[in-house]
Length: 167
Image (tube, rainbow, N blue to C red; front, side, top):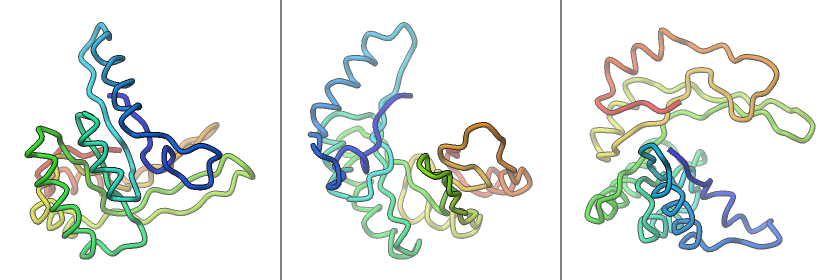
């Protein structure tokens, strides 16, 4: 799987924001020329309109996340995105919990919030997402050390959540 971060492409603090459709074309061409099967992903779009643009741009999968919203408030917009994306033959990845993150500048580590298995199961059932990103101690941008993964939680999520899990 290859792709781009939806939040980064259109971040207003960047000198130039990017057109999602151009990145969709680029990643599709790379995938078509690969010697192995490759899926394309517009990952972690914090603006749902960017996820919709990813569907229109031809990504195989899109992801909408908003860690400021409760799981309950994520259901309706995610469900609508799933309906639209599936009608276009595109899969949707959801997220319940929040990954920890290590900032490149300064090395500050932000703690995540582990995924609640029951909340994750309900979210998947109510939205129809095709895959679910989960937080089990995994950390974005971690370098030079290892994360302490909660394998018991991962096993429980695997038992309860009826779609592939994404770390």
